[in-house]
Length: 249
Image (tube, rainbow, N blue to C red):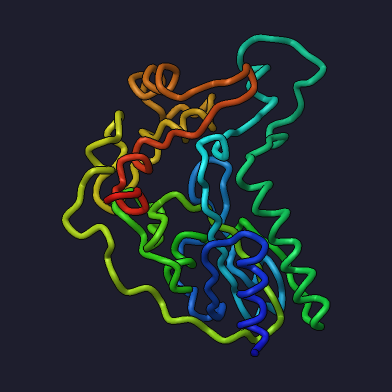
């Protein structure tokens, strides 16, 4: 069994439903740098010098609660003064924390084999995952996994190990379907394109962003669940509308 094969077996044992490998040079030309307000994407080499293999890992988000975001900065925006309010960036995203803890197990696995490695959420995950063979980028711009549809979240492991490379995914699983585009309450989607300032998750994430229209703000307040003053559950209208991964479809 090769290191790549044993690594993939371990990743499945940890709980990932998809594992794909590529080289950093195969990710040239992806959108790096500032993507939108306060969000930057790095190349594998920028994130981890000496990277020889880029591993993308897909985790099945089987419950909507995985999409919860807790952010203490929301307290200050609501006018509540509290010692709990900290600087922007003090946040907790459940699925990211779950994946990160699992990815560290795999980093440890590679490092025990003699190869420095690092988990990362900072490279372009969706486009990298396509080039690692995990699925296609759908009309909702999310990764569409052949079995689980858009109900997956992604994390990468960057390693100095030279693992066997997987073929890029070459099929458009969306075909003629437009359900995700039609389902978006704010009209944020065009096929394969997201108008970020009309996305309710972007609006919930960026309370002071001036590029979000008042109509989007109103819908975000109405439709995005907020379990507590400091938390919200990311919008999943386009995910829920996708037929791929639904039982009996």
